[in-house]
Image (tube, rainbow, N blue to C red; front, side, top):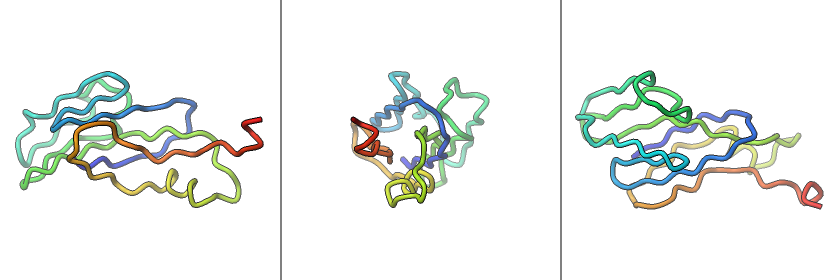
Length: 112
């Protein structure tokens, strides 16, 4: 599965779990097993606020799911960690379990 991340500034968190073609977003399971190779499932047909666009399955079988990546305030100047959140690379996963999303860690002075 390929997760394409679209960063959006919002005060929310997202938990992602993968098991085969089953994608669980904040506890809500989305099963894409019936999507055949070469098919497109429109965003409008998916009941999840976390899906950022159409879900596709390439002819060779790779499932691509665009997801919203929520993030908090970005420091200025941006750090490498911030760049990983604001310009995230796609995540490829075939291992079942939680998916680690890029995230910003609050500055130590903000934690006091």
